[in-house]
Amino acid sequence: MSVIRPSVLVSVVLVVLSACTTVQVTKPPVATPKPVEGPKEMLRPTSFAALPGWDRDDLREAIPAFLSSCEVLIKKPNWKEPCAIARDVDANSEKAARTFFEAFFIPYQVINADGTDTGLVTGYYEPLLRGARRRGGPYQVPLYRTPDDLLTIDLGSVYPELKHMRLRGRLVGNKVLPYLSRAEMTQSKFLAGKELLWVDDPIEAFFLQVQGSGRVQLADTKETVRVAFADQNGYPYKSIGRYLVDKGEMTLDQASAQNIRAWFAANPARQQELLNANPSYVFFREEKLADPSKGPKGALGVPLTPQRSIAVDPQFIPLGVPVFLATTQPGKDAPLQRLMLAQDTGGAIRSAIRADYFWGFGPGAAENAGKMKQRGMMWVLLPKLGEKPDISRQLTENREGSPR
Image 1 (cartoon, rainbow, N blue to C red):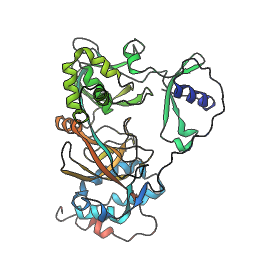
Image 2: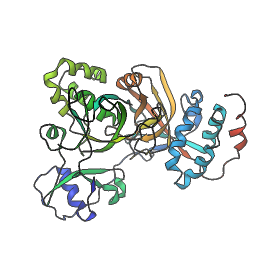
Image 3: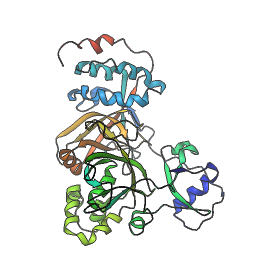
Image 4: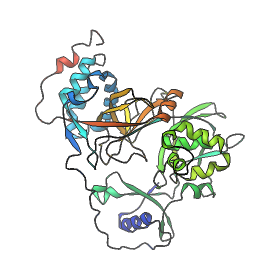
């Protein structure tokens, strides 16, 4: 992967945004982007008593995920103290865990740009695919590594207000062009030689890209490896479920992963049409599966914790922070209210109150993730500033006693 020089960044941005294929690299004047207008308060301070279900969540389960976030957060001044104290919290005491979070944090309700306080909550998981290192037999579908000619343009390095935003493209002669779309890649041999692994199912390969990472059981070497997100071709994610809804193939309520798979099975001749409806394409890198009990690394750079990690939009929610999520179980009205950690991002996660709930690995995780399309509310927990009470005894007093 290459990073384009700042001297040509402006012209690259214009070319990629307009999707031109013939514009020369020049230096036209560019106005600084205007910030998006929104409500005065997108984070509204409140109390823990106002969080629905806060008193029923077993916060012991959130401590390990929080400590994972602290591997990154502890480098920030306001997080040094809570991250240091968290190491001494009695992991067996729910009371100690609750005391810790309530003593060191203030909850802030997240508000959308339009002033509303609810948003979409979906789910994702780590899938298992069957594959091989070499093409042959049923293994005819490639997973690609990042191409050498993919340029990544970090807009935040020039415009701080565009932090976490990147554009991708490729340099052809003296022209910067958008990178190839999914359809263009599948209709050409442009990526020949960049195959990482081969798998046996194009539909599962597509859903692997949607999830962002997964495991592949290799038939030829008898090993299971993890394939992790490496990069993306720069096109925005487009929902194939929405495509089917717009085409009248199913209703919005029916647009689950399970029903989309059923549609693929019933319409094999239209398979590529539906896949190409999402121009976004994900590239992978191989990782050793040292500990199968741990999830893949998210955008924060730490392993995800099943049912305690979520993906968020980092333009609104800082990566690593605790987030209390109040939503419902997949396809049901039963409450799902628990403290999560914002440890990942996603191509479809684009607004303040928008979360993707990590269910973990296995058939049950896949089932829940495929059905999850709920409404939810979010509260960000940020460190208290100033003097805090000495609660060290409360955090450790039950270390030799009852788990509760």
